[in-house]
Image (cartoon, rainbow, N blue to C red; front, side, top):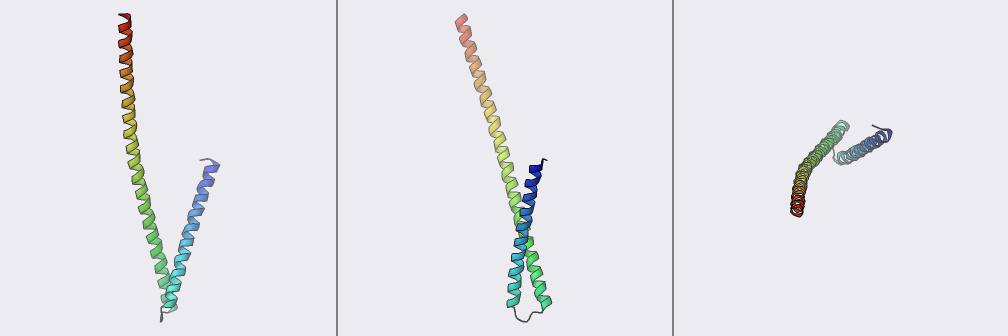
Length: 114
């Protein structure tokens, strides 16, 4: 892997980290706002609600990411199989046309000589 590939990979990793952190902070903020509106909760209970909500959001985000990854892989596999079929068909058609042209040329040569 050359330096530009490593730099691109590093930037992608940083972008992913920043996205996850922004998502986590947003979930933390929503949970804190919710817990603040509920009357009668102790600070420990508020902290527990915030922790649970953030963990749940992270879990859901991972599930969605895995689902998207699985779907992309399935689509890539489908397209790879379809491309292989089309490539085989093109090779067969090219071979058939070449054989027909060779036969036609041979017939014309034999007809011209004979």
